[in-house]
Amino acid sequence: MSQDKKLNEKELSEKEQKHIARQKKIKAEVDERIAAAQTEKGVFQVITGNGKGKSTSGFGTVARCVGHDKKAAVVQFIKGGWECGERNLLEKAGVPFTHMETGFTWETQNRESDTKAAQAAWQVAKQYLADDTIDLVLLDELTYMVTYDYVQLEDVLNAVKNRPPMQCVIITGRAAHRELTELADTVSEVKNIKHAFKAGVKAQKGFDY
Image 1 (cartoon, rainbow, N blue to C red):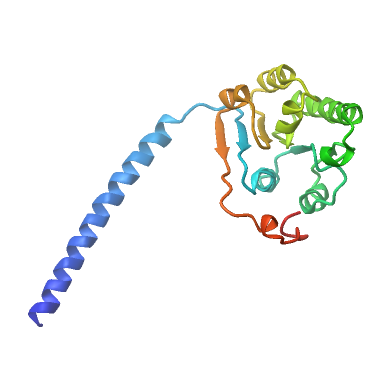
Image 2: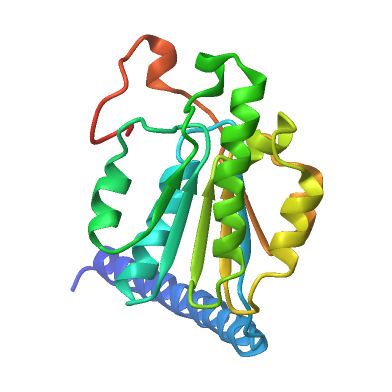
């Protein structure tokens, strides 16, 4: 065996040993965090930010919930009767959907009708948030309703605080109010780097909705 080959094998062995040591350290840290995380409770998550994917993430969690034979419910604010691929799929799996009838608020431009529609959807949401048979409630785009003052922040906070102990809740939408993020157990912010729509690419069925 050549001297160069012996050196290469030695270097590889040293790298492998360092890798093993590093991974053992990581595993020990992860195991320690898992052992420490013993609290069982329903998780409140806020998914906010200006990037694409907030609703998609929320619906992914709904699909995961249903995949484990648990019960989920969805209330959609903003999108209204616009066709939704997630709704097409999940309703067939028994997930109840409620959506704000007026749809996109920038299309109606009518505060009174939008407020009534938002309140009607919110009343259903409150029923879901009081139902201990529902494991997960997704309130899609609810942050806009709080921002526009169609739904009172205090009402949302109280409903989330007083929900069944093991019920999980996800609220999505841009510019989540500070009190929502402070109350949440998990907060994710989706950042916008690039978006095809801004480059003139039409929204596509099966990808964007």
